[in-house]
Length: 354
Image (cartoon, rainbow, N blue to C red; front, top):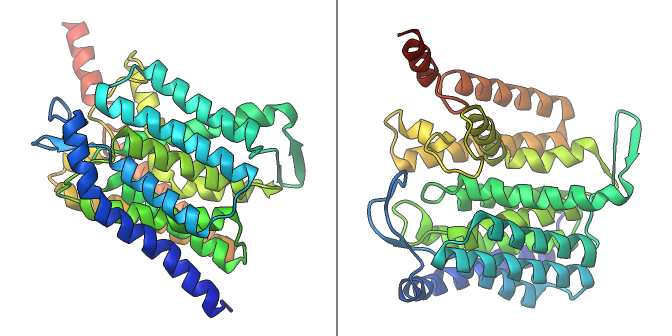
């Protein structure tokens, strides 16, 4: 049974950052326009008018305010603040002048190193099927790889109004529910609800039609905190509890995986952008941007519900729901060119024959 004090705290952890970000974002939009952090429509972009970026600055300030009110200073939290600032600064610079991929990756790597080395927030060991694995010194590269992977998964899915912010919000809410019901009220608990409020406040201005975009400052920051929250809950974990947070961002992870496979098969750089992402496939079926985003929300919510059922209620029922969702993903892959444009393959074969 939750105490009235805890319920009040949870509400305030969401409400205060939410109101703050809703109020401050219009001012950030003006700043973005003044410094040239504006997304100009071109190529594969969906929007049709210049739109300010730097949405991540508002989310970060909301998160910072929430921490100042509800957080407790610690070496772990210091590492998270330093890593967050590195991610935010790299993202802001990229939103203004568009950095080279190698420079952006260096910023992500540095932030991940701060978390692993200074914060000692690590994926140290897992156990599954009666087998225990201690990663030893490999905990550091595994942790860094995990953080950088989460950052780029959210960044890649950030292609439509409200998409990355909505998926991140679903993640924060689900982890918050699970942590609350399990009686875990530590650092990850505070981060989860503060980030939920901050991201929802941003969504007020970012949902279709968007007045501001998250930019790399926003998508990278949300992905970074998603990874940190997951890692904070990975102490002495089983493999299944490791997988659950990953399933909550299944759509971004699958979209990233499909993009890597697709670009590799085409002989292209995996860093090269294209218009074959999951949201592009739905748009090609004559869905509006808003309907496309809502459908992806729905699938992500189903993954979230399966995770809650699995952790808190019935493991086998969770398996069933996960299985159904996996089947839907397979059907989607078969019926689209999200992995590869099979029409192009047929065309290439015909050209070779001629």
